[in-house]
Amino acid sequence: MKDDYLKKIAQYFNRELDEQELTDFQQALSTDKELNDAFQARQEMEDFLAVRPNREKLKSNIAAIEGDFFSKDTAPPKEAKRVVMGKKRLYWLISAAAAVLILVFAFPALFNTTPSYKQFADHRPLSLQERSTSNDAIAQIEDAFNSQNFQTAYNGLDAYLQENPQDVSARVYKGISALELDLFTEATNTFSIISEGNSAFKQTARWYLGLTYLKQKDYSSCRAALILIPEDNYWYPKATAILAKLPK
Image 1 (spheres, helix red, strand yellow):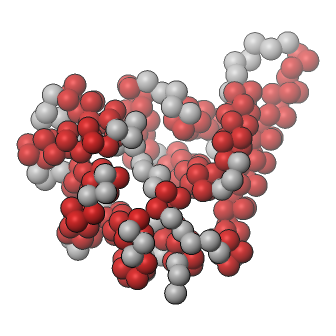
Image 2 (image 1 turned 180 degrees about the vertical axis):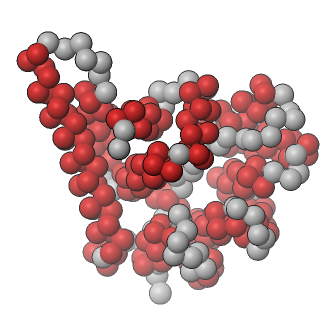
């Protein structure tokens, strides 16, 4: 794997990319399979850290290691070994976290607490594709959602969709905003309609439909939604993790 991939991915999750760099990175994800595979692996690790104890300490350790790993080659010779060790520790830490994640998925009975919405509500950043609205307005919507200001994001997406009703991605994110605001009826309707369609967001909508029911502790409806996600889909491992721990 190219070191530059790891650097960009680290900067993304540490929120160190400026607006143009973020746009370029998201574009690269859609065209570069190797980068996308590495990104998905890191995303899975982030998902794991989001639901396990001591995650902040571990995440800060990762950030510190990445700082060593990606620092410019300006250190004196005595420091060279430290940087190499940082790289080894980084790969070891990622491998260890991935191994524990596999353990959680493979042996869910060992982690038998009932799943909660907050454990799995880790949303992908919003990046609107259409540009018929002013760029400033779009940037404000994206910033609102990505900073978890869901009321502002909801209002902005509502206005955006009046001009761009064909943007299914925006509808998904408006549904997520509605879900975060506990507008359950709207969220359920939004995700149900999209999950019954044939767009690229069909399974994403099904995932969030399951989360909508999970947040309301409607476990039977949550199971009915998540069980339909196919094995080859991105959301399948997360859906399986929830299904394995839902009350019977």
